[in-house]
Length: 315
Image 1 (cartoon, rainbow, N blue to C red):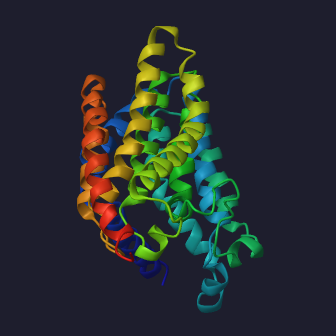
Image 2 (spheres, rainbow, N blue to C red; image 1 turned 180 degrees about the vertical axis):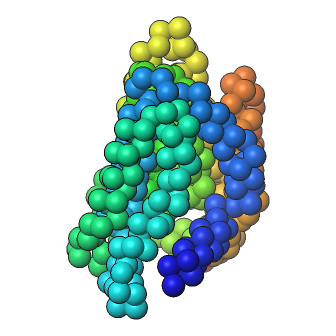
């Protein structure tokens, strides 16, 4: 029974990867995963990483466990749901445990495993289990892309945001955090809202575009600001950090403009995911990011012309 449920969990992860997009999945598997693995192997025995890496994994595990919605369901069909949780968590954290053991960090491995057991055998709060939404009071109601996207990717966003707060220790952490947060946030615009939502504000197409870009980009800047401030501690890379910060804001504008350049009511665009991911990867070469600054000028003209059709349809 335990192994069947774990197999079902792996199947859910596989199916859920479809929301990320094939291009992003391949990028994560072929490029990022080997780099992260190399980083962990090189750093796991260097102070303070033997504490930071397992501690981060434990925090994410606790965050996932505390928000599980299936505890009472599994308790009804399986008389030992905590054993199932333990097998799941031990399986998914096995690479970290093996890495600690390979570096002879036996005490760290024992404490890490004991913490996993404690998490697995704790009962999620009933309030969190029954909750179906995440309260996002700081996100304006009109920013429905963010409301939906953050609810779907909350754990992933926390996982990518927290390392960036340690950017003062190593600039690589800031770069990692900035890249993946940008990849996640620009993915929010792949689904197109119905026409009635589009024209609800009553403004013209150009005013709508400029207002939306300004609101979303400014809030994105506020979210990234703590990460950039910590990265600016590295004096020799201050211009580089500022450049990537501006490039991320430009990619947010690019994602919004691209959405309305190819907008069709209530449609979904796989091309949007592929193009925004490519734009993020290309912008790693900072001079190449200037291309998207110029390309946004082309997009805003095309998007204005495309939206004009829908704004004027009722006249």
